[in-house]
Length: 444
Length: 171
Image 1: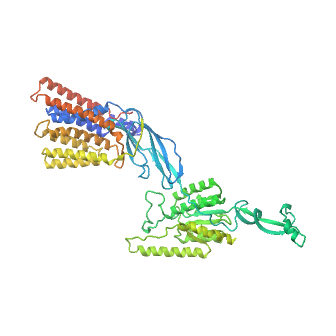
Image 2: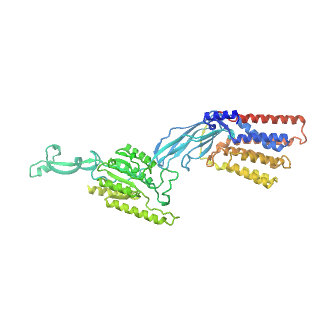
């Protein structure tokens, strides 16, 4: 290696590599070497054919090199919303400064038919702005844009790049489905809210009529009842208090399985969560339930059975719904962190409604659910496994395995019911919540 | 200055164009009576040029077909030569463009406007040169013209050496 070549390599290393400078391609070498070689050989050998075949290559190369590309191409993207809803299409604006003398731009842009950062588009370098749609389909974390690019001079003889672009990531929140009001605990906690409490309070619902006691307010005296009474005692009307309920959504992130049993041991391809799988269903269910309870003024919290650190304290309001939906994405990202479910007493306040969203594929989650019910909480088990499991068709043990799994699950769900826990498949959640709501009222 | 319109066409069409041009070159060589072994070799190199347009396969294909056509007997301006002139240039150009577009990419036809215009301009010059050659007498040239030709060739070699040395320019 000559000293000059070594010096050039050192310079390239210091500058960040050959791709960050304008450099020749194979096409330039081909055009110049073949063009000159054929023309010179034609002149020396008195062969017109060689000269005629070489002349266009030489002329095209010299013509293309007459415009020397220079400057540093810059590709920037205007700020895009980092959080959005699944299914919406956002618009990103990419600004291109290709430098002087550039003619072609190869840039990676999102495409409607392709998930991820999309294919490379070959465009004229004269485009100043590229408006590209960001197709946000599946909820979760993902990459909206990665503007890998290469800028080329005339006939792509000299290029700058390829440069790997910075990833523009986004979080798509799990979708919310309209649900009817679900069951609430028999003893709602808190001092205010929408649910009738057992305690006396200031609502309009009559609790009882009783004799006047010291400390009662005069305006509470029911004069009609007092005058009719024979004991000449004043009677007061006592109303119920109104309070809100604590709802704790318990997400089982340890399993992410779909209907096909053969795929259970395989990782989800191209996505953090298996579309239509148990975790996808559980996250969608949790988001919908959270929205439903928060809409009626209750406080909703979240527990990740596989990762207790991702606990969200119960809270109320629209911001809590956003917080929960964001946290659901975080929980799904770190799914499968632990094999043992953790549902401690301090994660679930006394009297809270506990909704366990799980495919119930092991005994440990049943144990944790029953333990929550024994602590006095109203517990609802939401089964998120696809309704019909599909056996592995190529394995003769496929069908027996499917039957064993189905039977084991049936035993577990029966055990839950035996402990007074309502079990509801997510596929029929809408009807189930309707049924459970009056039942919860009767029990009060 | 402008905006991008549409999704463009699939990028494999550019590679298909390389394949079609390569096949036409092989066909022209076969028509001229080139041996089957050489046709097979050139065909293999054409396939390599389609698969790896940024490789030296296109250079090999153009070089071999030019030399094979030059050594074959016949008129210098026969139709096979006149067909090969745009074909080798087209192969050179399509390989250059396909090399910067990955296989799954998308091609916007507006990007081809300037290269096609330059191609047409160069081909007009090449056919003008061919017409000039057709008008010149085919007997032995004057010694002065020979010397001028040799000096021109030497100048071209020096020009290429300078351009290749200058190829890794910092923008």
